[in-house]
Image (cartoon, rainbow, N blue to C red; front, side, top):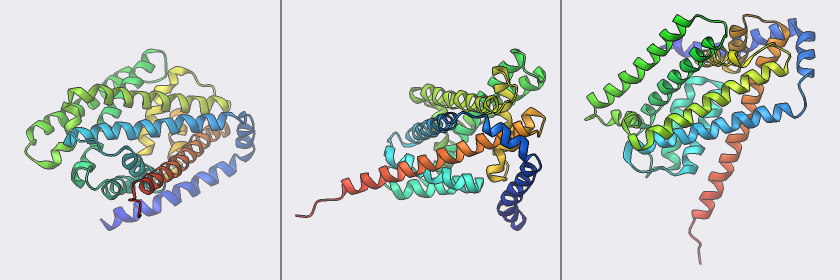
Length: 297
């Protein structure tokens, strides 16, 4: 446990330091690639990622509603996710506990139990994994580099995880924590849940492809699947904001200046969107709380 804690806190700064050294070694190439990005392109990329953050909160709200059949307050859900996104941008493992604690604080009456709140992340994760692998397989069929058998195996594995969670939700339905998986069996909300998560995958993949293209990296729409999958895997690593450049480099199989610049643009637009989202929802939550205060006569 001690070693795990050390890796959680030490790996992000070490990864960022390694990234900075690599960027400095390719400084002129990176500067040239970043200089080619049009001024309005970066705000557009930030806006796209901001949209995915809003959609992600709405998907989580659907999962939470399926637990108790009671909708938690929208401002509380977005407020809790804003705090979680900020924490996760610094140290990924912090996002889950921060989200659960923030929701209980912001909506103590409407929020499910803490373990149920944490469990709602599981359906989101496995459905996103399935959608990502489906996009990967589609891109391989469309001509992207990659092994079709590997892509098909990834789809099968992700589908197996979805079915396993669905079975667990039924098998352990008598246990309160299992209610956190209820969205998988909720026919009324499941379709919207999948559609919202699908929109997130498409927007995220498109943003990554656009970032690389703007920096001069030869990339096609068929590369969206492998690129998005690599970014997803890198995002699971405890390396902080170095995850996006690492994922882009892994997908491209290159650490040239243009590829590094593309990874930096993805990372910077993500951080900017998270900061804007967290600030806006904090203001909204504050305004809602002020409006709910009783007026003293």
